[in-house]
Length: 426
Image 1 (cartoon, rainbow, N blue to C red):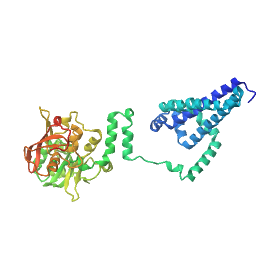
Image 2: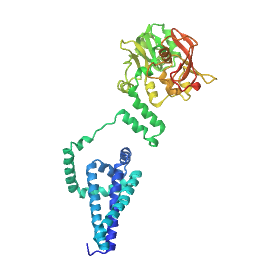
Image 3: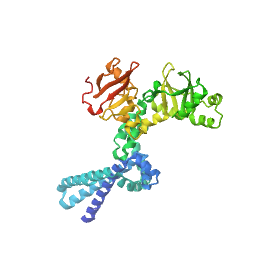
Image 4: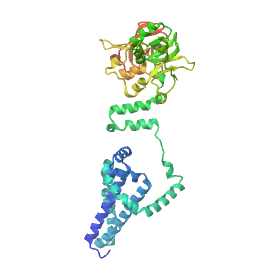
């Protein structure tokens, strides 16, 4: 080493510093790769991504290889710097060389390459994977020995590397991931993903069509009346009952019934043969579970019952899908038939309107953790049955009771443009 010229030693030192920068930057690049994008690129056939994914399947081996190379290069560079210092300035120059080498390594072999790698990980990680793949095979015995000793030290400290796998994210953690995805996920897709995560918190009675609004056909009516109702119904699947809604017979596909009518074969007997048995579900069933139940049972419509078995409402697959993708109507005021916009900017709302639909389609910030309907919200707030002309303020929204009927609010006027900042002032 003493016979080598100073120029050769300086060149070797610069080369070692470049290797150190490569090891430091590639380590950061590989460890900060987006694993979902990496899997996508690997599945699409990207060669560098395939190698990087294979390396990251055993991160302890990869880290062991990188640290072996980085430490070897840095120690060798320190030795060369010491020899150069002695040659150029004697033993007194060794502390100066150590300080300069520390500064150079910190800036050019650590901070700069790691920062660049963190900002553009794929740019460095994929080429580095081509270097590390054969190098890992060549250095496997030494890497294995280093990892064996390192894992023994970790076990002595109560840390077991094998336990690090399988840490599933909770729903709230997944929500954070989706929220922080930013430009990586389009806004509409992001909202749909959040809605899917929220299905667990919503039950079928939050979105069902209430019993009072159910429309069906009484099988005890004359066949002529049944046929007339079939011809006028806007529904594909028609609810059928005997005498009252408490005695549901099932559902019939209106197209099949009309086809039988066109063929001249629609009699009471043939009509009842077309009836499909009703599908009942408990009212507290979470939407995520009901979505799977619809799929498993191959049903699109279900009747919601309470703990006593009484029918409370009806829910369809379309209702569940709207919780994910939003309302299918293009105009918010058309999304709910119970909302009528007025010229003065107010809205006449039916008392039976579902609060969740009002919040989702009209973007009003009304409370949805209590009553399901606007009538229920007003009655709960007043703690009494309101009279026509009563005015109140809920969540800052001025609400006027326009009409009452049968001990319930039939119609109310909401003025969203006059919303006040204070939410609980009467």
